[in-house]
Length: 214
Image (cartoon, rainbow, N blue to C red; front, side, top):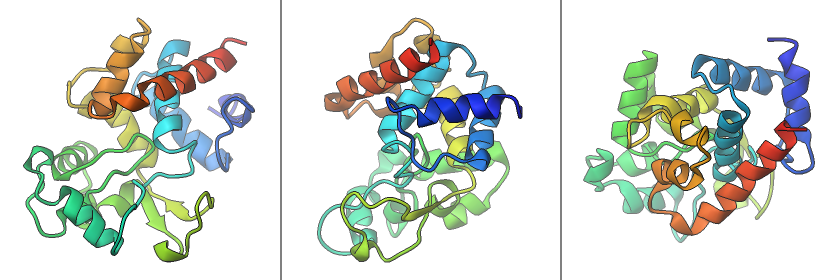
């Protein structure tokens, strides 16, 4: 693996990608996940990293962003807690199981499936903290565009690889679409309700692919 670290660090640091806070630990976690989940061809890596680039704002946001009035708890509970399609059961489910990870998984059902797969039920107790991480300062003090405000979670890459390979709503290995450059199908499997972002996602995928081919 060690010989791959400089190559992937160069990739992530490329000006067309501009990943935030590239370091050996994060890069090794990424490489481990790519190998584990069989994301190996240029197209597969481009699809996975391009979607992660978009979903996490280039590694800057591994937690779904809070927006609106009130506290984050109030915001996410109002948005998600009673959404039975996500497996949520009310109460604090919306906040606890908010979007998290480099490819953001959302909802009690997804969290439970990942916890079962990885063998760590603490995920169901700590929720987003173990996947996306936690803010290292009060949310109300975070300025727009400020970086370095999240201590990234243990499973940020692992949950993303699982979602790409197994846990997405279509239950399909998204390498199948990536190798055919069916990027809209990839984006639909990741967030079918966010079609307005598909062109931006595709642009990020193409940026990664362009760098990989050099």
